[in-house]
Image 1: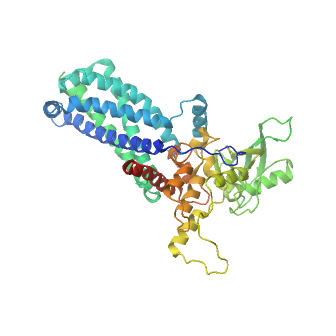
Image 2: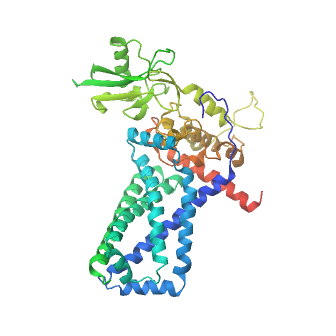
Image 3: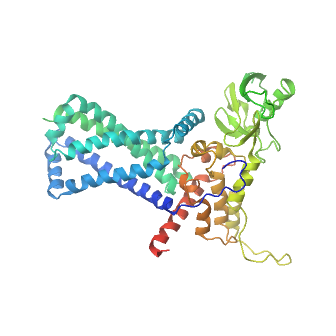
Length: 220
Length: 247
């Protein structure tokens, strides 16, 4: 509010309420998908890189058309989530400077977490889109094909960047959604933050182990 | 004790056309039980009588002495120097109009905010001075009082990342807390849609990023996190209801 303004009247916008719901619901849907996705990818470790379990799961999803329909649907949900959430991002240089200098001087963990969340959003949008396009245009998904990609020079670096970006964004996002909508109360905030940190680290660890399995143990 | 404190203090006199914003350095011997309020008074008495800062109650009640202390907003009167490093940087709070050095005008901003959220009981009941006051459940009265404890220091606004990005528009946690104070008060007859008129936009509750700078710096420890979440839910669901009612 301007300091000299007596009663700044800014009209309410009903759509803002709906968009707030769209943001959190698409976010929750994507988090659920990412956790499922991680479990399915991690199935490569069950038979030490043999790929039988992963191939079985992939075949099931393709035979039931869930990959063909769900894949583009997830891409659409991700795009909607980005566009709706981008309303909150500092897109102007003046805003970027303001939040950056505020974060540097304030030394406040939750403020930094949001900066990380905002930064990872752009990286995920680009790298996630490349990943989805590559996978969905070369169906069917097989362990051998995934291993071949990861054993190629550039793709390993690609996934070593994408994995922590996604898990950071997901972990911070779940925590922030809980705080914003009241599922995480003042009394449970510290414990929730600790749980989210452990969960994100566990997901990164599972992802790294799976990458190692694809890189070393699975036959391309 | 026995430390020599080094102060870096923002200096600018808005009323002096020749004044240029800059930082001044001061040194001061730390004494027992020293607060920033005591230190600033000593600096003014012993080293620079032109140093401007605000204070009134010296007891964390009036909210006048809020300033940025090593980057975090807090009250000078209840900040002990022993809890700070030997080098202390003091800046005036952002968002509010600068008067000079560490002194800002929070009064105009808060008056404007209180007018915007229509910070008074809205009722059609006639006040009868002779009649006995209507009784209120004790727990409810305490809940209202808890939200009424805001001293309007402005720390929550200075700590807000969204306010940093939208300093001329965003309402801030103090306004949201003010609204929830009236929402829980049964004497206020306003409906959800009327509250939505005030905070249902990007400048209001839907602009809040949930960074919790307000929650973590409020010197009165007001339950801002839980109040902001409650306001977001109430305002959000009040509009979803319209989707189904078709109005």
